[in-house]
Amino acid sequence: QVQLAESGGGLAQAGGSLRLSCAASGRTVSRYSMGWFRRTPGKEREFVAAIRREGISTYYADSVKGRFTISRDNAKNTVDLQMASLKPEDTAVYYCAADLRLIPGPSPREYVYWGQGTQVTVAS
Image (cartoon, rainbow, N blue to C red):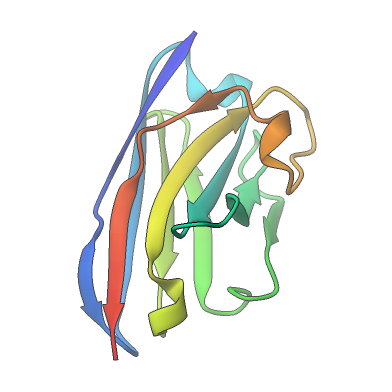
């Protein structure tokens, strides 16, 4: 069992930056591939980014590629999402999640542990 807690959400201006952090407790996060998802009202959770256990291989949704960067620090049991060049359409609740597979994918159904989410609002 692993517990995930997101932080760092808030209000940003379009073109600005925010950094989200996901802290894990319980089992070490190094056992898992990790992902970030987001959800807006009335929509399914949308894949944002994922990172493999070793922290080298990363994957991004086309909508955030070149603007967001996922990273992890297994020693600190954290996974971060650096968001830059924010757009109003990035407004959502952002969730981190843990995946037991070696290669993480974009389907939320494959992730076994989830945080409670943190709100990100981007003003135009």
